[in-house]
Length: 251
Ligand code: GLP
Image 1 (cartoon, helix red, strand yellow):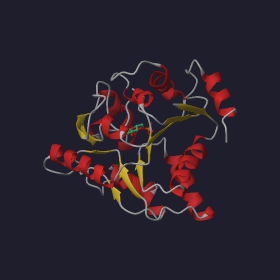
Image 2: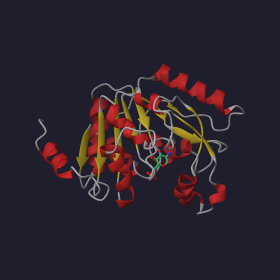
Image 3: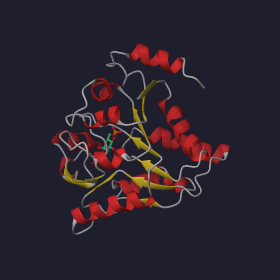
Image 4: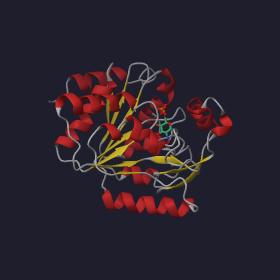
């Protein structure tokens, strides 16, 4: 696992994605939430100013709220279109069907779809303050596949800010790629910023590999990069070592 501590996480993340796309990546894994937004803005800028093209590249989303139609402003399908995919020349964008009458069947179908269009070359990830990735809350099976999950009270509170601070509007259930599904990606790139993520980042990077911190599966992945700003890195005990390794990375 590579840990990159930088004042410009969006540049490092955009370099990873752009490098993969230029190297022939066919499928990107996209995350929602506020953490990857600067990365998406930077990729859009590179598309407009530097000729970065996503032609022939498809994308899969990590997760979706159950009960929100893709037209709802807070549905992840809409979020990713508004904030990224509508602004570049990406091909198809797939996401779980949060409106399906049978969420479990929709989850199975989505897992099969990922297997069809995958493997995902680079999966972008954020991290929840409780260590979740996608919507895999603590206690998620480390080999889980896409399925319906119930959000923790903490995650619903964290996400209420997107729903006019009205907790009652935050859906209780979601469909999320499982930790096993996410792990099928060739490269996992997690971005986290701000002191509010410091504890979760430290648990993911330096704590035990445990379902109690779903992001700790990055430790078990053959290629994982954690890109953090100094505030999000502030609880990493080996921060100096990560800085030293990155500064001396063979180019
Ligand atoms: C949501 C998403 C995650 C995201 C997390 C953190 O729960 N399902 O994919 O990583 O929130 O969001 P933020 O980046 O806004 O802190």
